[in-house]
Length: 512
Image (cartoon, rainbow, N blue to C red; front, side, top):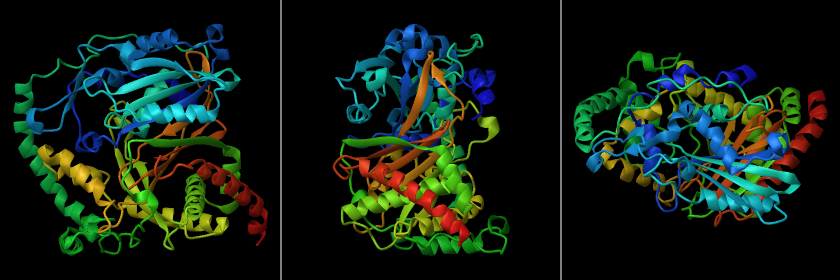
């Protein structure tokens, strides 16, 4: 995201897209359905700020409220509240909250002295482990004062049903500026708000109208969805699933086959079971830190790979070391889920989720960091080629099969399949690399030093490594279940050590 893109982020498109009552897609609704007393589907960002560049050298709660109030017409999701369809007959809608209270969503607290990173991580763990209030718009923002070095933190917390990585970046693009003095904002226009909150009877009527449309859409997706599920973790463990996929795969139209006339190949690697693939608790563990982007790019150039290859290889090495320390490393490679954005340029400002995913074996069985990087490059290249042959809305097709009335129960049941000893895990962990802005950003005049992602874990997938590049650094946010991974700092220690090894071995490897 370049400087001009950030300057142009608040567009007329955002305002116009907010006028109609919007229904959640099946993918959006799945993030609501997965939640229970232990699983939370909000995504967070921990921003470290230097307030010395702000007016008066401070950034307070009143400053944050004023900033958001001025830009609220450019942030329509901040006022959206869920409107549930009676009896769960259809997926819910977003509608403007008639009782919206900005001060409820923006809060302030302070760390006790000395305000170090360990105290900050502990506070983030507590805030992340609290569910959002579904009777209000699904977001919160916390100012955390008292960090060492006269710094402060800003923790954003938004539900995944509302945003994905790209649409979340759009919202931050509204709040952040490329200049400490801010920028000129487009004026509020008439019609920026959604229609009124629908009445229950109206929502039932809409559900009745949507049912045949949804059934027809699901039927159209069967021929292209079921063949793709063959070889997917857990699905192959269900009796008869592979046979059904193969039978339908042989009958699909030529347009759904690859260049050789065969149905697209599926990965044969099944995720091994580790201690990180059990049921999670309601408690989280969070670790964060940064590595230099210049070093990552240098390693990328030396070995002829991509930045994403380096990030995934470093993550694989870190998880390998973590499991070795716990005497829990399988002989087979672990399998990672890597989210991929399918958002098109003309979908900017539409919010919600436009995502797919790669399910990729990562070489946690490889002790040599250089060979681990090469194998990562090979596996990701193969996975990208396969992903290009899959329909971009495959995830939507899969979730459309389930009737809305059964959606929550089915979603949680699917998630918990991975914790059962009878089935393979869905995958072992999540690894996500999000390109961020290369320019200096400010919020309310305070300089943004780092931006650490804080993402989601679920039953069966108790580790999430999300990475965001910013300026000249790569910011890691690692989230796990506190009971399953109490010593999570080991992950980042290994990342730094492996990056140094790759840097030192690069000349020797290049020469050979």
